[in-house]
Length: 263
Image (tube, rainbow, N blue to C red):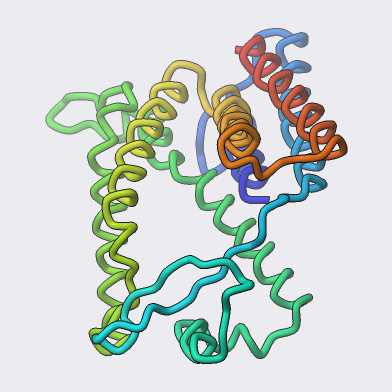
């Protein structure tokens, strides 16, 4: 859901020129057809991934009995839950327990779609500046056309926003935020990896434009994560799952190829 909405919004922003962007129209009718085909295939591939069922037991959040009033959490298998831990599992969002499963599914799907919309829009501001360089002159100099020059402002905004949300969360928890200390370094490493990947995304948009880059960037990471699930975590097992995975990955690769050929 998140990937599909991000793909559609990011692609449409460049292809149709929403929010004042310059429309990015392929030069020939064949390239235009391949560009549309790449988006359709990318969205279609997500349907096959929905049918894949993980073979591992789901994990749930449990509290760790610490001196500081259960201030940290661990991830344990659901089967290990007990009544003592249940008291602390959902203290951050207790209202969710009062919702039916159906409502929780709708809420989760809606939030995933909303996150995808925001992710699809995150490169709109700097693309707008590059499309309207004459309007953003500073001391008779045009703003750079290279997307790498806008990374600092984006990453600074991410850092400040994350800090703000954490401060608000800590205040709401009365200075007792629930943090799992074992994820500190992995979180930093994953943040560095995401930052490097996002730089590649910006370079791709600069070179290929949104209408071409978004279908490629949104489908190929799913192929990589599926391979992790298949060979490392072994979460995908069974012939039916293999068939769904193979078809979905093949369609995603075709979508990326068509999008690249439409440049």
